[in-house]
Image 1 (spheres, rainbow over the protein chains, first blue to last red):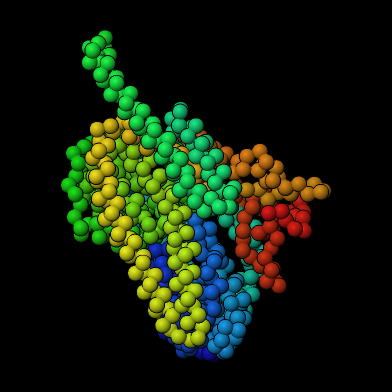
Image 2: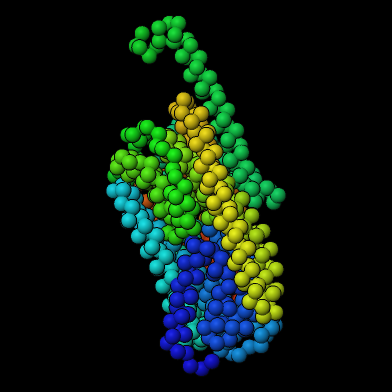
Length: 277
Length: 304
């Protein structure tokens, strides 16, 4: 490939920017390697090779979709870099021919993941700002917080992709060493990120909790544990929790409304307790 | 949190039915549910953004709009394509000016289970089938594979988004009017369901665990804890933060605490965490990462 024109670098940035956003918002399908890789291939002047890399990467990607907040090493930077390597090393346009490009792209996929982790951590802090905007009924403020994260994610992905475009395999090695050296920091962010949702749960509990509700909290917790322990029910854990919870809630609703009706009927006879004797 | 969300809206007259244009606008905005995704509230702020066209029409009273916006920032995690179902239900409750506690409980109860259903339907079924078939076309160098994938995937996505929004809004409006006569009892029942689901969420999403292995033969501390009660640590952390928030800690303070404890803990190899880093040969690191201070030895084959 040799020379990379400014225009090519700019286009790669734009594509990475859009895909960085699309992985969580918008169409949530543009970012798939089968779509991203041909676009990058076309920018670099080898459309057909891009299509093949996209197909190969897609097959690897199936089965490692981001599910329930867990994230695999990032498919977007992985796909973009695999295409860049396949084109720059002039690989053969077959499934076997482009295999090596996937391996070279992995350090970048890992860094794509770091970009996501850092953004999600940073934006957790921004939620206090969102609370403030909500209390002021500031509609634009809420919108801007959403724009902010999209811009941050897009820029991080754009910068990483362009750095990869110029840095190539040498940069890949550097990134790999770096992540090896500081693996405890990224593992720490990973562990902390996994625990931050407990703050969200605690805020919910603050609203709903009262004396007798503790039993229901623990019952739901137990129900989820039991469902998750069984391979055949694990996937439906929360749905099953909702079924049992709904049964209890409906029973309680029926009982309480009956009690109210009876109290009302009784009150009619004795003149009403609420009147203060 | 200085602002206390009121239990009831000031204006309790039900708002008129939302027009098609507003509902459609909300469906389009629902595509940005995860635009401000974060670890603390997950989709909360993107959810609020999507709800705003409806909320602004429903709450003409400014104080009510503030209250509604504030409680629509609760933790939320559901499937991005099925979210319009939750939107429709919540809209019908907002429109009938249900108690804020009711809306919050119903929202989390409806959103949680949909997450699992959506993952199974879309990420584990639709994507593997469409992408799997079209990837083979791509490997032969045909761009039609990518085009077909985009068309099929997005046709399904938008049919689901629009269909669920109209269906659940209609359903919710019908159901809510039946319940207004027993609002207090309904709030209580909804809270029971909500708190039950939150209990389930703690066990379902709580991934925090210990990495420490001590002694020879190796004893896995997490294994011991699991013998007492699985997911004990997520439960304890949630309760601990609940106490802190009750004491007046702000969410930001809690998050900073978690960040510090998380990173310091991993420096000493206490928490499990995945750095996804590789050594020079491209192999993953045993135990997910190398602690800064290594004071115990992981066994050759780390216990799962």
